[in-house]
Image (tube, rainbow, N blue to C red):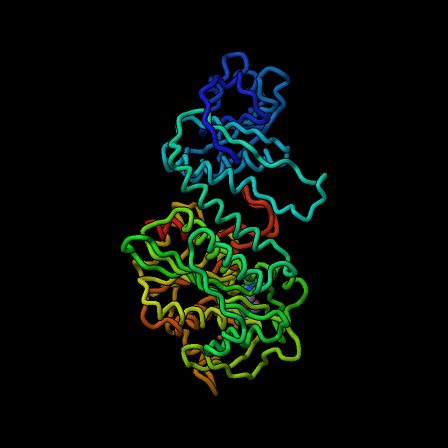
Length: 478
Ligand code: BES
Ligand code: MN
Ligand code: ZN
């Protein structure tokens, strides 16, 4: 998508969709840029559709030759905050995509740097579709050019586009069917980033076992598709200002293993690698933006499947850090994969580790799909992540990491069990992970709700959302 600016008069701009942004209660003032005649007619049309500026409300009409644009849209900007601009721009892009409008013009008035960035982020997220498996004639044209009519801070586009490309990659990986995205191909997607200047190391199943990563080995061993462990690294040219690690859950399909999921619960379990997809997406953005921060992106990729070699209830795993885990449910597999990755990250001596995982249904029960659940013993790290999420317009809510619930993981035979029972399921999962980080400030993001949407939500098409990519990149750059 080409990004442009234009100073031409709005009525004369030749495009497929001209979208005018309206702040709450300012319909007439916003449309005045069209000239008095057009303004009063389109204001009447907008009032008929009850458009008064509420954020992301939108309607579009054919211009019937009265403008050079084929269609005119009016979209609400609310009070005009960064996130309202993002959502409004997203609504325009989503509408453009549904109509096949390739040349889009946004007239949102003057946008400062953060709003310019937000507008591009919104359009990029809103125009995304996973339609590679649709017939060509069932696909609508993508937005080819986006022009801003009004002063913008174009330097903010660089960051927006890097984040957007990272989100797009994460969404493609999540949406990709499990026949396409399995441990080897997920690792390949990471390895491709070497062309952008990252160092990427990939371990196969034999190496993973030989290194003593008992969690990844066990979960991966029930599938003919071998597990992979991946370590991506961005090293800045000068001395790094900070050194950070991201860790992702990469279960490319979660059948539940022998503790088999019912069909309905399994339907969308191709999304169970969304944590590692977010890590890959964020690393792509980092490779693009080349910050003076050393960033490690780490994930374990496995299929949780059921051939005769699958791990079993009552197995006792020896993990990478030497602790032993009793298996009481093979569907609590993500924490086993993450645990080995966390130990590895902990040994890098970085200043902070953030892990991302579609870890528990309990997080979805607690917070729904609008919020990622944040767990961290470190207030400063938690607050920095909350601030970055706020800036990104992503829902993030801190949950208690109550040590009192650690007893729920008490085991008969090993160091601990892999499940804590029916209560506080997302907290006991986080407490389990905590046992694998000894030395480093750490935060855990349970993205089970926001990573994948069954239905369209705001300007996001159904499917993978790229949740937390934008938050992570902002946090790393902060
Ligand atoms: N991948 C699932 C969690 C999940 C659920 C992600 C819904 C996205 C949407 C995870 O591996 C899992 O199965 N968790 C179990 C844990 C339980 C067995 C302790 C769960 O949440 O039921
Ligand atoms: Mn599971
Ligand atoms: Zn899972």
